[in-house]
Amino acid sequence: MSENIAFIVHLPGKPEHRDELESSLLEVLEQMAKEPDFVNTYLHRSVEDPDTLVLYETWACSPAYFQTHHLSRPYRQVYEQALPRLLKRERTLEFLKPLRAFEKPAA
Image (cartoon, rainbow, N blue to C red):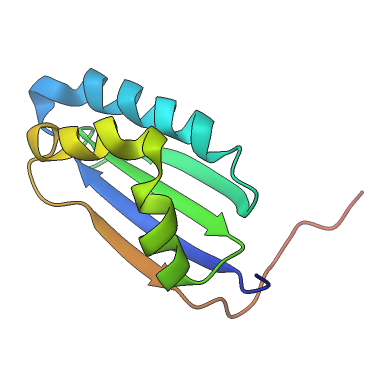
């Protein structure tokens, strides 16, 4: 697959499950990084709401393939089942259309 996608994931966690959400997510990210069409991900914590984790992900696949294939991988099953308990609102995925990249020139 030659298509690249980028998207942002918002995980609005419940305060009482902040540590469990983060540790569960880190386990998934470790496995996810081994996928052949994984490019990168950046994990952030919201400044306005420290219980919310935000991911910026890039994959070498289509949005449809990501949603049908990667979200159902076996290593995600326990995590996906726990999300309703860990989150105060449903997770959101916002797919992005790349326009242009800007990088710092090499010194």
